[in-house]
Length: 477
Image (cartoon, rainbow, N blue to C red):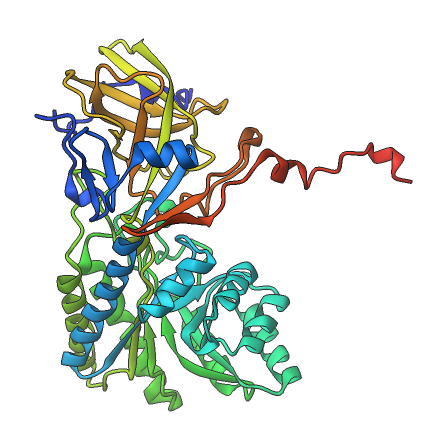
């Protein structure tokens, strides 16, 4: 008989990796954006602005974006990879992965800081167009692109369309012929590398929906079909091995396998395949157990892997090697600010755990429920001298799995009305947010030393009701 889904949630009060804090008010720098400090009053400050003032003026729950942190990470990533690959004898490009979090202003900042933009739907493409991102600075993904999406990508002059199926190759060819253009194509290849991550976000093993299998020969078949098609231009190959990855060796194996296919295509078909895209998925610190590589080391390691693969194959370096960072840029730059509503001590059978309910939940951060993701948190509006207590932060929704932070130490005097901040929520929280229980989605508040303002305004109940057809269905005639 299967156990109840909530069973594992009610075991030991805290996991072995969670250290007992010497100071419950201390911030682990690797979890927070670079401009987060505690003021003399104990409250968190973002670029000098107190979260107490932000909560008073803008409300909670709210995603708070440290703009300078995001932009500096974007520049550092681009510069590190350009430098590493220039030293290796080729060039690197960086495309911000919009799926992590996208709005018009973020797209503008990414463009201004030298990144292109990776989109995967018509909606993301429309945001990019509104932000003024030119087609030559864009890549388009998606495993089931509609004719409308492909047509829009061709019309906008998107630089690389990453194809994912034979059906898509046929659709794209027909559209390109109709428009009298040649479509720029990159083949997405599943290289059989198992990234050490959650099954749902590991994308390079064979049994999944993305790309063409290298092992079965499907990737080569797709490349041959594109190469023969007069309406398609085979630019190169793409691989993405997953998300939240810390082990660089998986990238090295993926690069070697992709380069092996490239060498075959160049030898047998005369295809140039001068574009190599190695995806993204670089991990960040959500808790003290996460250890991401510094970006300079990561870039140097990736460059070495590509050079080594080319040398082993006796093949020249590709003209361009591209990367698609998303989480690693926007994830640490944002935190979610909540207000505590209810505090409830619960006897688990292994000791008492403090359940702290906030005014958001799985509607603004479903990652704990979806991926067993771990997060940290801190009381944000004040400092506390109380002893640490094992705490679980939960949301307001009618689901037992509505958990935001599964395990953390919080001060024993945490109480209703306290502000609570959860770091590392810049990626895949607002984009995956829902209106479950008819709860409006929070806005995204951008903060610099000199300015504060919405870049995504919070939804209202009026927004939700605006799509709800109020008149009786059988009265509409």
